[in-house]
Image (tube, rainbow, N blue to C red):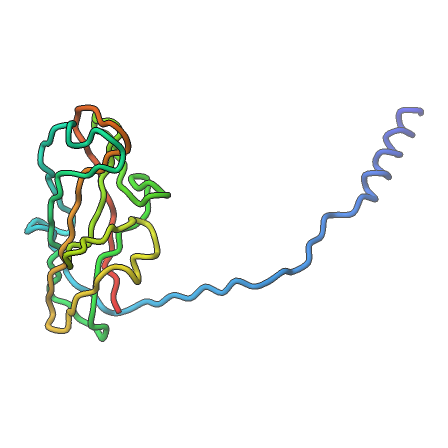
Length: 181
């Protein structure tokens, strides 16, 4: 009987505890746009999926953090472009291969250490750094005119030392999409 009274008391006590409540603080609005614009993409004469080979270089060129070497250009050829928007550029997506803070590409399966890959917008002499996964690509990346139905998007990639590097292979990848304006 005593146990039953204790259980009944506990049920009454916990049953009277109110549920947590929250008041509305604000509203978040999300805006986006879908477009009928499309272009076929060929990377360095291969296909939409391609491999860019960087040169083999000595670790002495990447012996301290922030050093870069082995810059290699690649071109994304846009063909058969259609739609009403007249300019395009590539947007390099976030993903498992991308460092979320720096936007550089991680060495995923290669044996070299303290090295990543850095993407560059090669459309001008300034060679501005592209932070993969960062929305600043929408405004900071050069767009090319596609009104003729085709255009070339020039980019580059290079080794980036996170510290003194060690020998080995460097292997990474990045997913991209074409953005239109």
